[in-house]
Image (cartoon, rainbow, N blue to C red):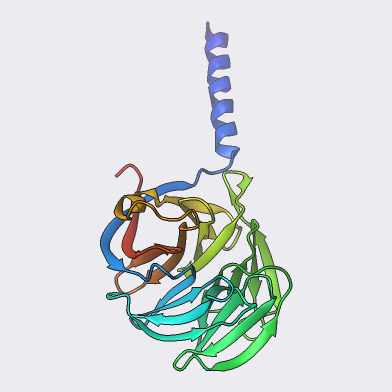
Length: 259
């Protein structure tokens, strides 16, 4: 009996040790809607950021792309610069007094003066451009794969690359990005999910289910009207979320799914 009991204890200990060695599970979160605000339903949102109370937005599609400054409370477009064909505008980041705007397949980065939207420079890069954010030291860029590249904010040269994994599996179709307190929040294109990524190792530390937002949207949205657009408000510690061709912008907090 003593040997049998000892053997059972060892088996249980072994199972617990194996479980501890497995990949850490990401935290499961959902959205708590604080307020719903108006948003231009014609905006094919590709990039979104908030600075000094102004929402800066990059919209896509060839012939409809733009850079915008928007009043987040009313949805009014304060300033707009149209991006001509053949460019399809994508992610957006603010570095100092410049707005940096990606293009989808043209391999061109536009740099605009934030106050006037006048051009300041252009740079080239290889591959597709999807999402972009600035963490205060480096830019982070997505290209629709599971990889994020860290880039120099001045030269746009690649400094490093991480592969994003969740519970041991790569996460592909990473799209719009928002850098917040050492982490990156990324839309997963064609899903209702946002993932929070640890930039030190590429691991997903949390998955946010944003499907509850659709209950706040009208019926009959077109197929392309998917979740895309993350901005962070540090003063109130909340996020602003929208989607491509959505008529609403949502102020939200991310809370545990069990709540």
